[in-house]
Amino acid sequence: MKKVIIIGGGIGGAATALALSHAGFEPVVYERTKQLREVGAGIALWANATHILKQLDLLEDGIRVGCLTTNYQFNSQRGKELVNVPVDGFELPVIGIHRAELHQLLWRNVPGEKFILGETFERFERKGNQVHAYFASGLSVEGDALIGADGLRSQVRVAILGDESPTYRNFKTWRGLTDYIPSTYRPGYIQEFLGCGQGFGFMMLGKGKMYWYAAASAPEAQPDAAIGRKKELEMMYQDWFRAIPELIAATDEANILTTDLYDRPPKQPWSQQNITLLGDAAHPMLPTMGQGACTALEDAYVVAQCLQAQADPSIAFQQYESVRFPRTKAIVEQSLQSSKMGELKNPIAVGLRNTFMKAMGSAISNSFKSLHAYRA
Image (cartoon, rainbow, N blue to C red; front, side):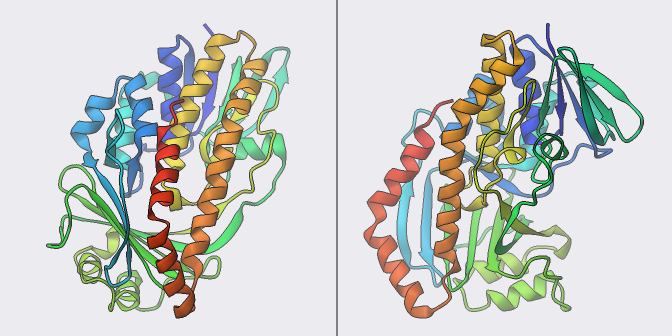
């Protein structure tokens, strides 16, 4: 029985703990927040991710608390359809789910004593084959291996690779949650609208919740407008497809979150002997392809498989990285490329982009299919 220390109890860390317990290991998760709570946002679990839920015996639960998604539709800002990608042609469903619901499904299945809250990782030391992790509280623990699932500004990453900042991609995003369902909403659809340097999308989650997201080019760390987030968004999107201002108006200001968007140019290695990284700590990506949480789930499953197949964690982590690097690199790059489509501000360029998207409909569909057809 190998003891594996996991730093970070988000979706990636919780999924890794669950995959490792299924594989007969003893994972212990150390999370710096005092309470496990995921922010109010939705995610689409594409077929490549629902495959992982199935492997972890959580697919039925996921379907129960989520909402089945059948189509991904791209539109102009006034609501003219550009591309309509059916996403229900796989042997596995696509699910719209609240991050907190997914998080709960994962950690509810990991024994409570394996989740230690309020512990901030500071550094590690290797002693023989063991790795010792030290925390701000004075706690120190030892294990056979350590996995950093501690997000975009991972402290484990800093400890093994040095302190290189992630890259700001000139976009900020707003995310909202409401019970209001626009009359024009097409059940089963993720609907996305592309304008000049701005975008907007919405989808159903489980339990009758509607999740929406907006993105606009902005300087880094731009403060909220003096009129507040909601008013600013209402002004930004007032002349868009009518469901959009309706959704913003129906959302409480307290339920609107904002984040700057970062990624990192893909590079190896992200492992060092018996220490490795996972999810955003290893390969942060922009949300344009909706694959951040999905690739973290894939990572979790693959790292557990590699540790099971290979007694030496250092070799297992090398294998895990060589399996995961080409796939995550391609998705990081594709996500960045598709964000460039959203950066266009010149109305003529926007018109050309829309025409190009319509013409490229089947190619866009095919690239979605190959992304989602992957089975870790």
